[in-house]
Image 1 (cartoon, one colour):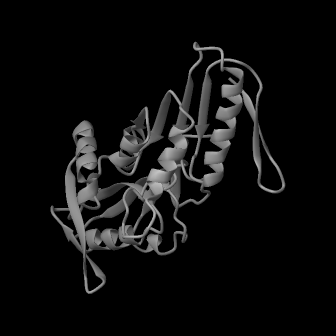
Image 2 (cartoon, helix red, strand yellow; image 1 turned 180 degrees about the vertical axis):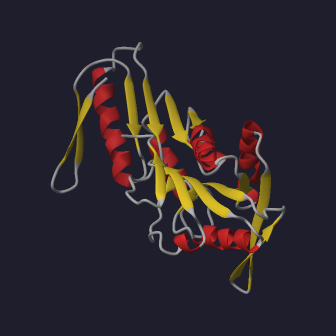
Image 3 (cartoon, one colour; image 1 turned 135 degrees about the horizontal axis):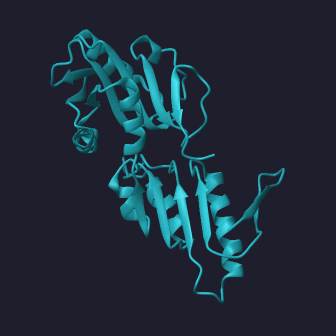
Length: 253
């Protein structure tokens, strides 16, 4: 089913349905404007399908906004993911697919939601490097990285970060001497944690250190990352990146 989006000069977003049938919305979903675009599309579709029970509506979000705000971090602060989930639920999609959500909280809060796996993109990075050791950057990422390592029959080295007097200290739980390493995680905002981790891996003898993240924001550029990371692999779920330091896998056009 096709639709058209119009954006007015004042920022208003409007949608028009161009043909009837099942609705399939594929969108980055990484901004509040995207959420209102989804709502406009769904409202226009609903208006044409009020009498029909045969057609279905599905939504695919490639980078869910607010997914890291998956709890109320401090008293008197908003629970942002809960607000976003409530907005999405109000649209009543039959299915909602989310690429590599930050935590299971997103799937619990959003009705009819399921995760789109990031494994195919990690495998592409793994194959391009040539059988590297996988590194989980923290305890939270260990389970999913362990599952990927089993599928790839790859070695896995856990790591963890703690702060001592405000300074990060990295512990590596395995032998990386002379080996290529691939850090695997869901999202990079600035990426400083990965810089520290890569530096520690090389201090312990790693030959090269690569980074895979599904959602690549890199809001502060790559100069600091280039000091200890040899190359980055990611998808274009958040934005398109044109930099020789980055290999991007296309998930949305």
